[in-house]
Amino acid sequence: MDQELSSKNIKQADKKLLDIMLFGLEHGVEILKVKGKGPIIPFVVLEKNDEREVVRFLYDDPEAGIFEGIRLLKEERECRFAVLVHDGFLHAEGERFNAVLVKGFDRQDTFGYSLGQRYIPGKFWSSLKRIGKPAFVGNTEKLLA
Image (cartoon, rainbow, N blue to C red; front, side, top):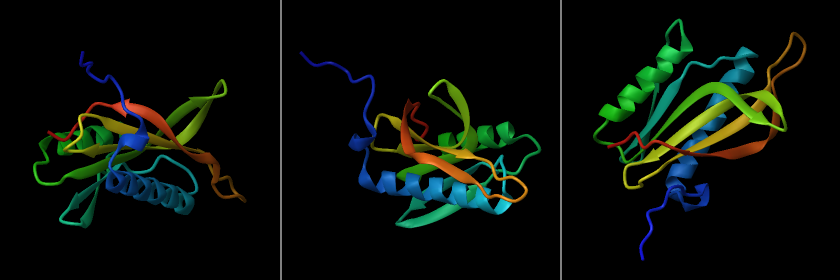
C-alpha cells in the first residue's frame, strides 16, 4: 500500500539546492556582519542555467519584502532552484533566538525545505556571533510551480 509522504528530511533534497541554500545563508550572515545587527533586507536567489541572480526587496517593513519574495517565487517560471532568505526567530532550548532563515525550493521536488542559523546581534564593540551550526527547521510550502 502506497502512502503519501507528509515530510522529507533535508538529506533528501537535491545537493545543488542545498548548495544554493547554504550560499543564501552565508550571504545573509555576511550582510549581518557588515550591518552589525538585523534585520537583513529579504532576498531571493534564483539559479538559471548554472547562473545565480540575487534579487533584494527593500521596503520600510521587512515583512513586505518577504511577501514580495514569495510573490516572485510563485510567479517564477524558468529556474529550477530558488531560495528566499530573511531575518527572523528560532525557538530552541526554551529561548527565542535571532536567526537567518532560508527557504529552499526545487521545481522537481514536492517539498520546500527550511534552514536556520541562530545568532547574537553585534553590539557597539563586538560583532555578530553565530550560535551553533545551520539547522534543518522543517519542510515548507512549495512555492515554485
